[in-house]
Image 1: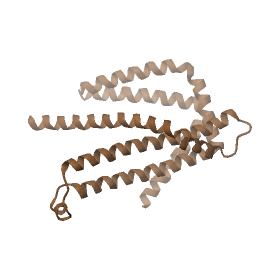
Image 2: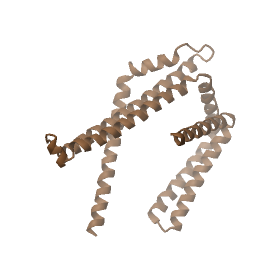
Image 3: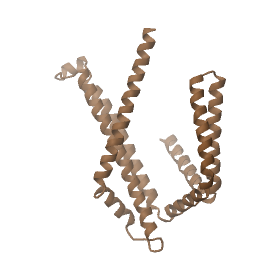
Image 4: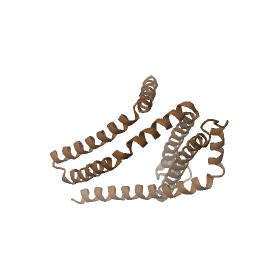
Amino acid sequence: MILFGCVLAVAVVFSYAYVWLARIFPKQFIWVTGILNIVFAVGTAAFYFWRRYWSAAIVFTIFAVFLIFAFYTWISRIPFSALMLKTSITVSKKYGHVYLVSFIGGLIAAAFGAWYSVTLVAVYTRWEPSPSCNAAGGGCSKGKVIGLIVFITFAMYWISEWLKNTIHVTISGVYGAWYFSPHNFPRGATRGAAKRALTYSFGSISFGSLIVAIIQFLRQLCSVARSEAAQEGALGA
């Protein structure tokens, strides 16, 4: 518990320092971030070339070339991006509910992740075929375990996406209120944005989250299938 508290305190300090530096030196911040991304990509590609891992080296080389080209085309837009970055940080500092919404959303997401983990373990414990299951009344099977895991995993993806997008819409509503009334900021802007996200925009957020959840779920299935195929190939060899 003490270690967790220390790690959390360090994370908060570094996060505050990160935002503070981005507000004071927004243009330099963007330049340094872009250059570091390029350096890391080139360094990773060079490392894989040195290790003779050719497939990964080629992929990271292409990635590095793309980053260099993209950063070159972005140079003319850096002043505007720096202004937007400084403005957004200034608004969030003035209206601290932005951080409060993010904090509450993070707590809910962490609690939901823990709930998902407990549910996953409970499914294995209750429905995995075993002598204890037969003593408890039976009904256990591999198919039931797989079906329940598929269901709760998909539900986890969907609810997580909905929560993330709801937080995003709520925070965007605060910035929207500031944009249209920069000198007369309305009272209750955060509550109003949250109300709109949970009522008028609830269907749109849920449907968009569903689409993203389906894509993520299919990608996870492909990843699992690829891993099993690789294991079977290794066993066959």
